[in-house]
Image (cartoon, rainbow, N blue to C red):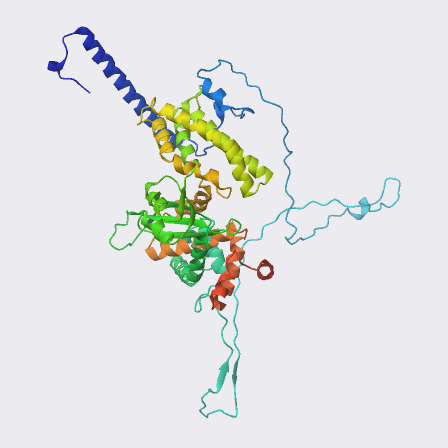
Length: 530
């Protein structure tokens, strides 16, 4: 801050102190601005992976105790790195699936070469087999539904209540008057909502095959299919509310023709993942708002754990009766990783260890405890005991370190923000210790929202709220199928073939990936494809 000349002290020593103080203040401001510039450049041009290598070296150290990192304030000055001996599996080509059809091509010697130099006839002693993978381009076919008609010649010209002509009833179809079969619909929907291929690109692909399917037609089909699947979405909602854990995340989406809103206004796609761990249910929900009321309304009457990031809109969830709000260590780690990235110069990390590295090492040690539980395939109770024994001391030491660094760090810098975020979320971040069914992070929800984010980069926006709601429904079905280890195309084809015949709640429930009869599913799917 500049001083008025009239307010300057007459004493030279006092003036010198003011100058030194101003210089220190300006140096802090300049340092923060440089940090912001490096952080922005890293966001724009740096690598997106959050993989952290301690010390900036390619090889991760075998022993990386936090105490050693915290005590190393200066570089050793040595450029040599000792890499411990290790073994690697030799990479090899995976065998081709046995289920694929095989076409044998015989290669034989000409008859004149089947004679030995001594004049004797050569005998066949074996064969060498090598398999090559071939690709057959997509093939379209027309299925003609022929419905026989019958009439009584004796009643010809005579009016009867039943009518003189009877026709075989049409088969139940997901879109009764449309030309699309379940196979075509499944291909179009999976191409967009699983492979991120927009409708306009699919239109061009079909044109190369000699078929005109406008993207408006595809969009209309998607909306009709989503409308037919609403009973399944309601059942998935019930599955999520069954507990014991719900993971929530949200991301932006641009929706045109939204009543009362400009086309440039951001809307949001929410993801809710829950249900039994081995029968996960995922529901996407489009909403114009990012208000915390959205998850509160969706989780009405829910009892159990809810895991989210640190967005303030989720704060009210912890106040709901019966809900335990759990934090996310991945988000806390990300903020310290940004500190390390901001220290990089010309894309390379400085060799000197900083506070960001220390924090990442603490968090890394927490995840090593999780790796032990995963490798040993511990039960939920065993995981809880392991965390109490090994993770809690790390957390206690980490918090003491954070509180010490908090008073030494400028609050507006990246490190200060990371420390404040972690301490403010601390009561939620440590809740995973008390239940072995919980994870330390919200990555289940983040991984579920990623397919939508990848697709959004290609199709950019939804043309209407109806399209956004349809997208949410179809993403829900496809991602739930993937979470329950079903191939998306085969599942959607099976679902759309059987959905028109469903009439009761039990019928709809039997079509959910969690309750699908795998034997019936495999038989129907393989019969339709091969």
